[in-house]
Length: 142
Image 1: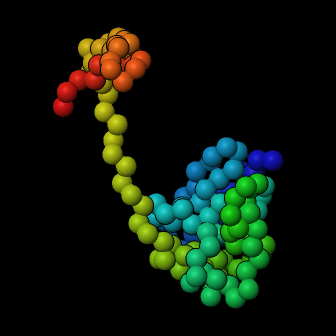
Image 2 (image 1 turned 60 degrees about the horizontal axis):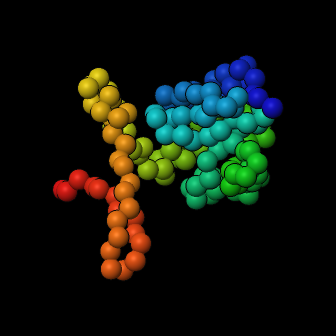
């Protein structure tokens, strides 16, 4: 079941005291970011915080559950009525996470190279050798 946009907006408003909060919809659910770090997920109108040791210490005894089938356990936040606590928890969680890797920008291939790539299939030829029947692939030399 997909999460409601209103619920995603509500959670982001509750967390706005932590800093630059944003969300991104993915597969009907949402990921919550604090300054480009994924700190939580919203799945089935439930808010899950990424599990970290400092976050566990801040919560005490967290309720853990998988946000979706097949996932590892995250901290399930059932009480969303304390924005100061949530903002502090999210800041603590983000501080313990590594900085996200910068992805290299994809470059477009020129039209001549894409045409070559489409035609660039290698032919496989069979050759006989003393070791018996083998297949040889003509690879370009480095």
